[in-house]
Length: 535
Ligand code: KIV
Ligand code: ZN
Image (tube, rainbow, N blue to C red; front, side, top):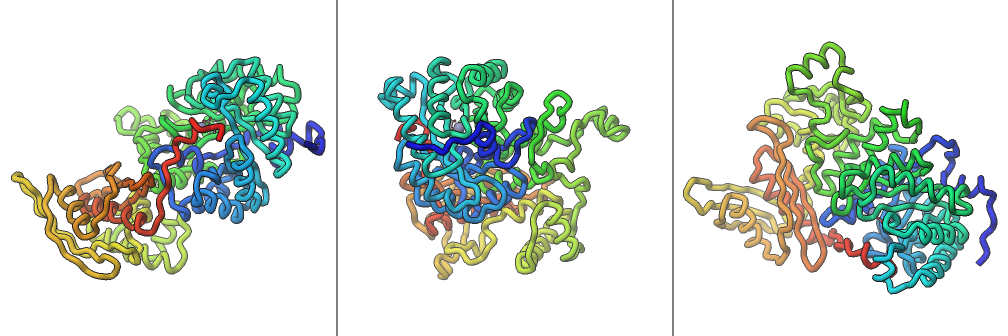
C-alpha cells in the first residue's frame, strides 16, 4: 500500500489536530464507547447525541462516539454524532479486521474531522486467545492499520493490554503501526494493572526505542482497577504522552476509566508541577457529570474527587471556620471553576418563570419557550410539595424522564397501603397504549407491590437487574431519584424518575424503562468486546 509521506511535523499535527504546542494535552473522551460498555450503562440514541454535543461544547479534542460494528444502534449514533460534529474529532472503534474498519469509516466519515481507532490485544494472553503468533500478529497489524489509513488520514492504533506485553514485542508492534500510517499510538492499561512510575517508564521507553515515535502522538488509556488511573495517566503525560483517554465520572468497564474531571483539574490546579494545558472549559464539567450520571443510571459516589456531592462541603466546625476566614484554607479549587453555581439559592413557589429560566441556564440547561412552559408546571407542582427547591432538585426535575406525557405506559393514579403486617398493597391506574386500566396487587413491601401491579397491567418477561434509590437533598421532604435497569433477551433498558415520594419515583422509573423497551430503545450488552478483540 502507498501512504503519502508526511513530514514528521505534519504527521504529528494530524494527530494533534490543530494544537501543536508541546504543552498541550489532548483530551480524548470515551464516555460514549468505553463508558457505555460498562454493563448496564446504556444510553438512548438521543442521549448519546446530547452528551456528544456537550462534550464538543466543553472543548474535548476527540470524542470516541462508539463501536459502529457492534450494533445498528451504535452505527446510527456514531454516524449522527459525526454529522452534527462541530469542533471535536469524531472517532469510532474497530477491531483488527477489514469489516470492522470499513463499518467504522462508514460512520465517522461524515465528520469534519474523522478518526478511525483500531486495536488488537498484543499481550501473551491475548495472542493465545486470537491464536496468532508474534509474526502473524505483526502481519495483521500492518494490513489493518494500512487499510484504515487508506480510508482516513487520522488513524489511532492501540495494542490492547500493552502494560502486560513484552517490551521488545511492544516496540515492534508500535513500530509496525507507525510505519503503516498510524498517527496516534494509544497505550492501554486494559486491566488497570500498572502503577505511576511504570506507566511513565513505558512511554519513555517507547519514545526512546521506537523509530518514528517522534512523528506521532502517544496516548494513555488507563483503567481504575487499583484506583491508580488518574495517577497513571498524569505520569504518562510527564513522560511524553500528549493525549489522555478518559470518561466523565470515570464511567467504564469494571472500576472504570480515568476520570476526565480529575486529570483536567489536576493539571489546572497543580500547573506549577504539571505545566500542561487542555482546551477544556472546566465550568462545563458539573453539568456533564450530572447528565452522564442521569442518562447512564450510574450515580456519582458522594466523596468522588471533583464532582462528588461532598467535594465542596465543609461540615466540621474547624473547616467551616477556616473556609469563612479564608476560602483557600480548605479549598484548592473554587466550586465555580467546575460550574457549581456559587449561590445554591433555594427557589420557592413564588419564583417566576424568568427566575426559573435564569437558574436553569446557570445549571447548564438552555430552555426553549415550550420546554420552559413544561418545566415551569412541574417546578410549581414540586414547590407546592417541597418548601425549598434547591439546585439538585431542579437537576432531578430535568432528569425525570417519565414526564414527557406521550409514552405507551403512563401512571395515572397510585395508592399504596403499608403497615407493619404485610403484605403491602398497591392500587394502580395506568394507561396502556391509551386505554386506562386498573389493578389491585400485593407484594413484599410497597415497591414490590407496585411493580407487581405494573406487571399485571403490562405483562412482560423482562428481568429487573438494578433498582437504585438516592436522595437528592436532605430532609424528609427531599426528592428521591430512582434508577431502574431491566433486560430482555440480552438487551438492556434503563429508566429514571424523581419524586418527593420514593414509591411513586420507583414506579415511574420502572415504567420509564418499560416504555423504552416498548419503543425498542435498548442496547445489546456488548461488554464481551474486550475478549473478542481480533474479530
Ligand atoms: O481498555 C482497552 O484496552 C480499550 C481498547 C479498546 C483501547 O478500551
Ligand atoms: Zn478501555
